[in-house]
Amino acid sequence: FKKGHRIGVLISSEMFPMYARNLNTGEPVATGKRMVARRQRIYHDAKRPSALRFRTLPKQAGVSRESQSARMPLG
Image (tube, rainbow, N blue to C red; front, side):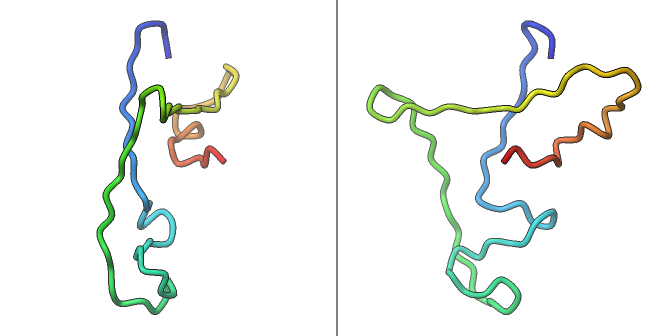
C-alpha cells in the first residue's frame, strides 16, 4: 500500500467455505447439525487495547496480485 491508502477489515469467527465451518457449539464439524450465531466485539480503550497485525511481503519482480492473495493465512 502507498502512504494514505486504506484497507477494509472483516472480523469473523469462521471462513466457510475456505476453511471448515465453525458451528460455535463444540459439536464435531463433520456431523454437527446445530449452529449458534456469535457476535464479534473489538475493544479499543486504555483498559482493553486492540491491535491488527499484518505480514508484509517484499516487492519482487514478476509477482502477481493473485499470488499475494488475501487467502494466505497470517498465522
